[in-house]
Length: 68
Image (cartoon, rainbow, N blue to C red; front, side, top):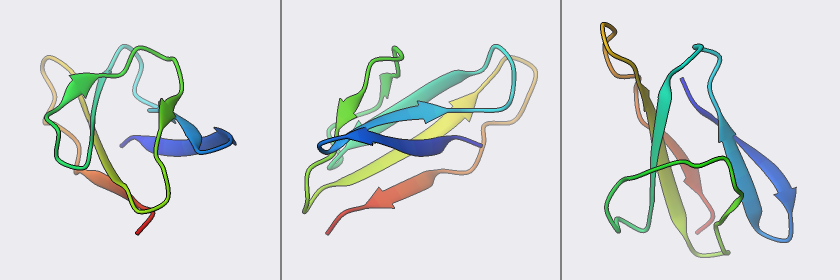
């Protein structure tokens, strides 16, 4: 399951304990993108969602970071 980590000034990175998993995220329902490892901006008032996927495993539950 992915975890949001605060880095600095409204920037977050996302990690997952499952090796070689692909992390998908979206901010404010804008459509899922693949997390590249660079911090994403989640401003006050925003909602970010993330899930992890890996071939052969069931997708993780969606994790929400709600800054509203």
